[in-house]
Image 1 (cartoon, protein in one colour):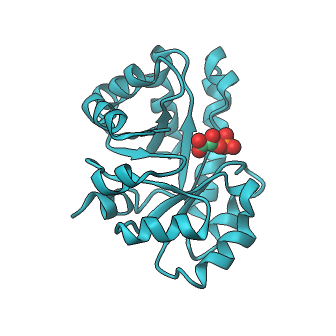
Image 2 (image 1 turned 45 degrees about the vertical axis):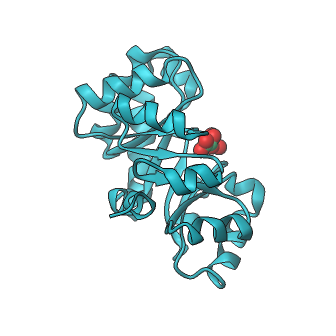
Length: 209
Ligand code: 3PG
């Protein structure tokens, strides 16, 4: 299976993907365990903090039931690094020709326009991250893209929350939604896993509906 199509297989049962920013790697394992208990079994840890790589490593080693991926992967060098750290998939906010053609692991490129969707499809991708979803037309844009691109599936991310997630998930071309609404950075920072657990359970229910 090529890396262009393997992410869609790997994440086939995932409908709600937490997009996590961790400032302290020691928060990673308890967070992953809290998410698992809430019924969320995949997570994207973004490379937006110095702690991200150690966080990915810790989850990969200590919480093997969690499908841990890396987000904000901007080039192939970073992709190799996150793969070595134990990430099982990689996500980008956009894409480059290099990433599309030389991905070395299951990969979800970002696409915000019809042209970017076409470039990803041309490279063999069947699942792309539609980012930043709410800012680029949201549900109406995804509905419009389904006509000319019936085979492309989206992970809609950016501005998704408990109020609008179900409407995205109801679209036939939306495979999953991603977001930080149930893993808020301030709750992570203060160790408020109880609130995260509650929000994550609600998100998991949306995903199953
Ligand atoms: C991402 O990188 O996917 C977004 O930052 C997540 O968007 P959100 O914070 O609006 O959920």
